[in-house]
Image (tube, rainbow, N blue to C red; front, side, top):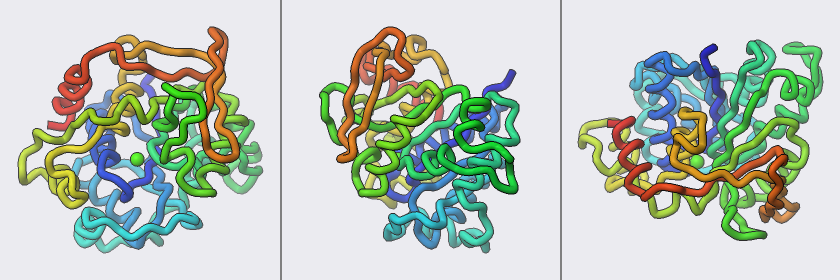
Length: 291
Ligand SMILES: [Ca+2]
């Protein structure tokens, strides 16, 4: 059975999201996986149209949603404006991300994996959602029945009480991380800040490649740290050891201040990964996938 994924991204805040989107879009296009949809958990006037256009340039037909009630309205970054200028679409042409998650999960065959490389308010709202016109089931019931696995780029797992951007930057993201991690009935694999930090990818792209241009628009024309594409490649490979990681299993928590903690336990529902290979192993793999 082909593996199916939903991606959540804070598209527009950083540029490693663009690298991750290319990795996933290419795997989708090659038929290795099916990307059911991509939901954006930040909001600018160019959010959904720019991701839509990026995917169109990839030749990957993947639905896009955006958190239309996102409390975090950011200034657009240049790559969003550049891409959005190439389409007539606006955010109004796209589905709300929480509704999209509910719909895609409800319509799925029970084989869904969710990757999150941004804030957790959309996946949290989907988990806490009530029955509606999409499904008579609650979000909790849908997740239990249909979501097999969740992959999160977030946290710092080499220290207790670490605070990492995605899990704790804003009040809404702290609230979502705390609620989601304590309530989610599905297994979660975390790839922490410490894994992708200082590991550069996207530095070998052709100058006329639109991914290079997006990175350069963000001030990362010489490459960017690899948090999001490392999570994407880990999830695609689907086997921590084959992907070059050691696994620590147990129970993760995120407190109300957004600090993350971990209790090791062989039978725990959560795990985080630790690099088992030299950095070039991961950067070569990602650079090959996006070349
Ligand atoms: Ca991100």
